[in-house]
Amino acid sequence: MDLWKSVRKVADKLLLPDLFAGLALTFKHMFREKVTVQYPEQRLEPSHRFRGMFRLDEDRCIKCTICARDCPIDIIYIDWHQEVNPETGKKDKVLDRFDIDLQRCMFCGLCEEGCPTEPKSIWLTTKTYELASYDRWKNLYVDMDELQQWQVRPAYTDEEIA
Picture 1: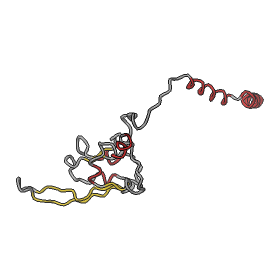
Picture 2: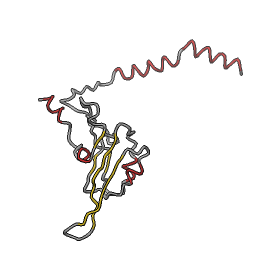
Picture 3: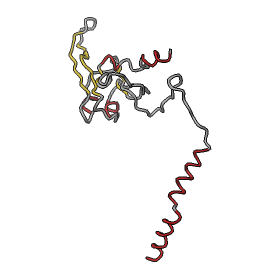
């Protein structure tokens, strides 16, 4: 049995099966059709599971703060107060602050899973991947207004194309 193991070990070193497996994979991809996207004129559509930038719909949000409690690193900050609705006379919750500190976010999606509203009031699948900016701190701390407008591309990409 030990002789067989030593023969196998020597054969693996001499024949280099890992090298040939890698070369086979290289040759397999060599003859596939190449895909080139002329960015920014053309853009790839991310898959449906892509976790892009956060998006918030304040009308759907019931101000329950479950998303902030479910966040494992506590980067969602929510403040709200109650006001009396003059039309109905009932108390309504009003959002004062809904901020996300993106420098520490790991885009795990637990905030989205914890949201009890249907459809969700906060979600990560915006398919926005153009988050670069010239200012280092511009997109790292996102407030309520910015969270509601992530459905559009950043303005600087349109300026560069024109």
